[in-house]
Length: 120
Image (cartoon, rainbow, N blue to C red; front, side, top):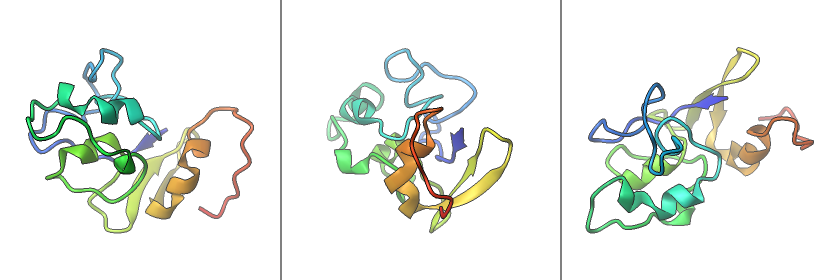
């Protein structure tokens, strides 16, 4: 249900309680999916940077990041070296390692019929 992602360096993006997102849907600001490719391709509409118009799609997913890299706003990550904390819809919280990125889309669906083992 909720995953960690530090706010942007300028503290403008990434707050869960308010925001319109890059396109008015909340995406990138109050909501973030497992694979935000459209957000990655439109990063220039958020950060007025001449040197970053899009972010590489390799940045999409659950992986380590840096507060200094604006492209790390397009994926879940934390300041922890091995992974991040996640709040589940049943009220539990778990620390998951970055290797779980492989099955993150399946973990993020509701009643999608995916089969996921519990070894994450």
